[in-house]
Every structure is written in C-alpha cells, then in structure tokens.
Length: 104
Image (cartoon, rainbow, N blue to C red; front, side):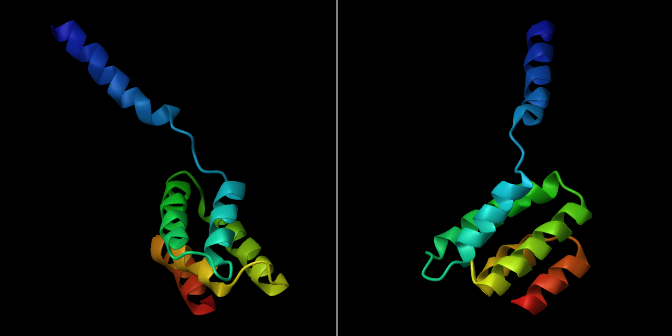
C-alpha cells in the first residue's frame, strides 16, 4: 500500500514538469490577437491565461522583449493598445506592469 501511494505521489509531482511551457512567440501571438480591432473580448481572457503561463517560466528580460515587440506591433498597426491589457493585469514586475498600463 505504501509503495503504491509513493509511486502515485511521485507521478503527481512529476506531472507539472511534462506540461508544455508557453513560448515567447506563442505568447506574442495571443497578445496580438487579443488586441486586434474587432477581436472578441474573450480573447483578452485567453491571452491573460497564456501570459500567466508565460510569466511562470520566463525571466523579466524575456517579458520585456514581449512588451517591446508589442510596442513595435502597435506602432506598425498590426494590433491595438488593447494587447497591453493582459500584460498590465498579469505582470508581477511592477515596472513592466506600470509600463503596460501607461501604454494602454
């Protein structure tokens, strides 16, 4: 019985390591889609969840790169400032959250 419990418990602990992590490109794509003109509001929620997953496995410099890419996409008209909403809501780094909020 103890052996079964230990193997089940070990399997449960190992499960999160097998989950796919959100890449920078995928995260940027979700944020761009959420910010496009006429995009359904539900996409903002999906982008926020994607951003939270990205935050859990990324560094501040990687997230800064995403914000820079968003800024460039907005400047070229590929998306709107609404793409900043998931970053402003989901970013734990105060400076990045503030930058996203101000840009929005």
